[in-house]
Every structure is written in C-alpha cells, then in structure tokens.
Length: 247
Image 1 (cartoon, rainbow, N blue to C red):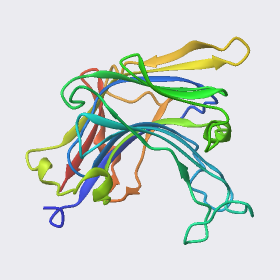
Image 2 (image 1 turned 60 degrees about the horizontal axis):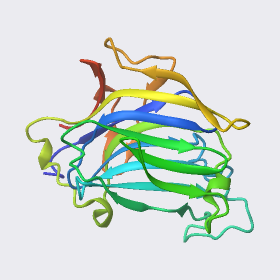
Image 3 (image 1 turned 90 degrees about the vertical axis):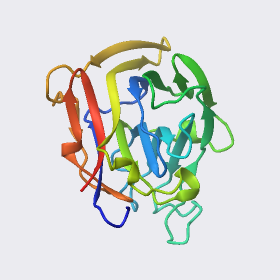
Image 4 (image 1 turned 135 degrees about the horizontal axis):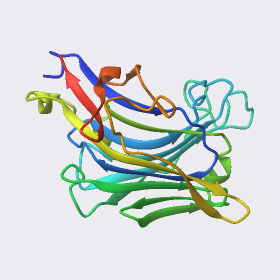
C-alpha cells in the first residue's frame, strides 16, 4: 500500500514559550508499525543547524509495541562550536538518551495521563501520576543543564522510515479510515525556582469546534513518510483529534 497513496500526519503546535514547568495531557494514542504518536517540548530554532542549539524533551509511543513508550532528551551544540563531536555531514552530533518503558496497558485502547516535568535541577516523566524516569544535573551526558532555551509544547502523529525504531510502515491500517490520536485536555504549570513549586497557569479542554488561537497552531511540513496536514487537526466532541490519513 505504501507506494500507492500519499500519507498525511498531524501536529498541534504550541505558541506559548516556556522555561521550566509541568506539562500534562490526557490522551489516547496511536500505535501501528511505522508510527510515532507523541507529546514533546521543543526549542523552536533547533532546526537552524548552523547557529542554534537543539533542546527537546520527548514522550513517544512507537509503532512496534502498543504496550511500550520511549522517553528521550535531545541536545546539540551549535554547529559553529569547535569543540563538539561531528557527524558525517560535519554538523554537531545530537546527544540523545532514549529509554524504553512498559505501560502495563495498551495505549491505544483508553485515555491515560502523560506528564513531563522540567526544572533547572531535573527532568522527569510520569504516566498516570506515577514517575517513571528522572534525570538530574551532572549526569554523564549533561543534558539537564544544557536545556537552557525556551521551548514550546507540541503533539504530533507521523510515520518514520526507520523500521528498526518503529517497525515497517505499510499504510494498510488506514484502509478503513483515519487513525486518530485523541487529546482530552492539556494542563500547563509554571515553576517557581525560589520555592521549587508549580502553579497551574492554564488548561485547555478543547470545547467548541476550533483551536484556541492564543495557545495553538498546526504544522504543515514533511516528517519522513508523511506530510503534516493542518486539516488533520480537528476539535470536536470535547477532544483535539490528530489524524493520520491517506489519499
């Protein structure tokens, strides 16, 4: 099927810029071979490879196992740095710290609460309010201290060509219609560095029929095997629905 159709994914792109905080979303995910169903924080200029650092914090449900997910930190020095390790293209290599975790449930069958917590001292991940991973300052890869840039909160659904990472994408799962990642609500908390406490700033329950333009826009670029389509992000029935489709 994969060569017979054009494929489209979706991204909900946050407009707010954050420096630390707690970020929660109650979601039902997508997982079939080749897919990535995610929630992440991202420094918006990370893709400017020559002059900007890379900062990213990930939750990813991968298509090769509906009962497993990946936490990850991605960092990279600007390309102008003379001290960074280079890849084959001459750019500074990204530093990653992927870790796989078992849910104990099928992430596509019901809603669960996903959270990322970012502070100057640590970064952690929670599922249903249970902490699964925590990275501290001064660990081997020094990624917590490298997270110095403001980041936006994003969600996306896409397909990767890396079969070793997510399985082989065929597209056949969309023969009967779209595959959909559901977001029930998003909650954002700020972090007080003096008191080391969190304060709830806003919550989006996705009521009505449109995205809140003060917080969200949508992506429209190519991500590996799909093009992100703005039409594939829909607000209805009290959910934000991010769809993968083909035509």
